[in-house]
Length: 283
View 1 (cartoon, helix red, strand yellow):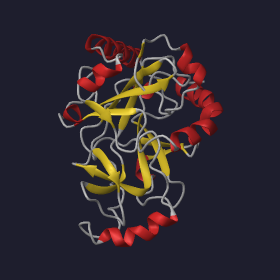
View 2: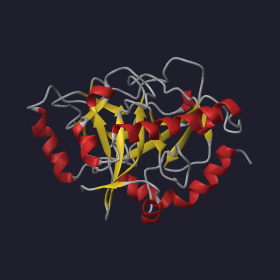
View 3: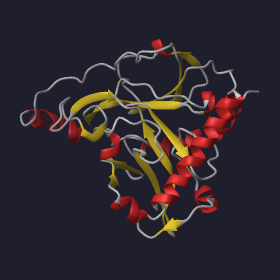
View 4: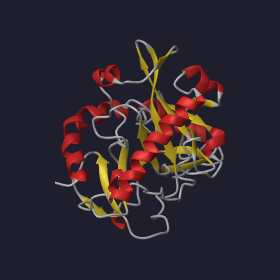
């Protein structure tokens, strides 16, 4: 059994809980709450104050480059398909779908060089977080990280988000802080691709699967990257409506049940309590 398939088997046990936890969490770890009847009634009135009404653009085609494989992580599926077959229209249900991507067939194990690159990325990012003092929550805030709109755990640094750098451990676009009884826990970092239509570099082969989100209700993205709100009536006060996020990659510092690059944000209380990481004051 390949490493990728073993990870899938381990993940099945947590998928049901992950769905509920992710859906309640955030637009990148989940989604804003699904549109309610009140929101639908308010959408028409909101259009008068916005830049226009109508649907967001369709989901863009795959970015330039060699063909890739895609796997629907949420709702869970075991099938991998050509990326070109991923639907280009947003789903009616559920509120959010997550797709994982790979340049390699699912039965291709990472090479020794790719395994080494993956381990090195985790080590370098943790070392950078320690050097910058980001395990102290207040230091992360002081360095420009702030909570992403509609989120609970993703703290974004806008300077780093728009600097064009990718997989730079000294300048990660996001820090992922979890609240615990002991304070905020820096569980890892998250990287973004450089643009909405850019593909993330898969340095660790099938060990490092990038993913993106497809939203039923479009999000408002500033410059194609930063989530600032949920669209109302298909339009935005700031940014442009989009049904798809940029590609992203998690790098976990704790012992994540699904591995150091797991897509799911769900972590049990036991996972957090067992983390051999410093906790910082702040909630």
